[in-house]
Image (cartoon, rainbow, N blue to C red):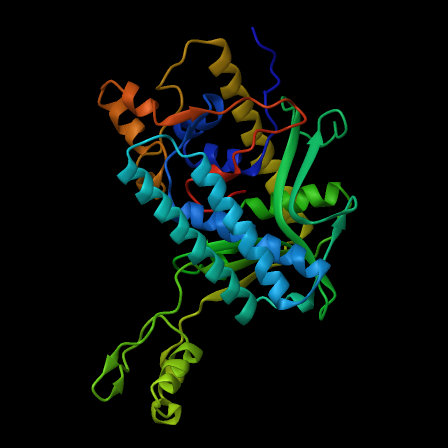
Length: 376
């Protein structure tokens, strides 16, 4: 029989998947089935992350706005080129359609990065923290059992964390773990406060001696501000998802006086960016680690041991049917067809088998997060 040590590093996304649906977790992590389908919402989030990270790193080298935008554009273009390069061979029509979807994602993600930099994220107010000589941007942290035996949960070779950004806010002299999140609708402070990811990352940062005051989510609305419709009398005064600055620019383009539309300033109150900030007491950070992370890590280790030492049992991993994530889960069709007792060979062909990584190179599943639209 195999040893009780799992063959991969523990990461937040695995814990989140196990909590939300053990069956999906088993397919994704224990069996290594990774969907190859293009998911626009998820891939848009990946492209935005790559672009904003490139912009932050460019700012460190040279704060010239044109240089920063260029670096962001190049990074997103390279992301798109990589996706296209790895497309499966298919008919010309289908291939060209998918290529166009990817190029559209590339352009919309770049424009979203530009809007964020132009209207919300003031990079001159932030100083990126340096960790082991490296800027803490898209920072991959590896903590092995050998180096941190008092910290890594039993049964795991190590813990890994992928942190979008650690930076000091210069005006307030406070340091934050920052996560970028693209959404169709921005979330409330209460929703963001309960994210399991953040207290886990704070605990890891503390163990590594990285001092932070708390966590922030840079929430970004993924859709651009709408353009108001033109009417016989000027511009429509209907409330739409846009900003006063966009509305005003459309008025000026048409030679209309913004003062005649003054009431639209308060009517167009849709928020496209938001900081969600959480200061956590040490008791909460420790409580999440000891009462959530460690028990779940132990359960996952046991499920992995069973999966490699005994005959696969589809019923062993419990499904969470009815979950809010079921509708856009990468394994939805496979799940339903398995329950119906149908042959799933043709469905399994749409997945690739992730290669198990050595202990010092944790399996990289960042581009395949199905429930957040982001990579973690």
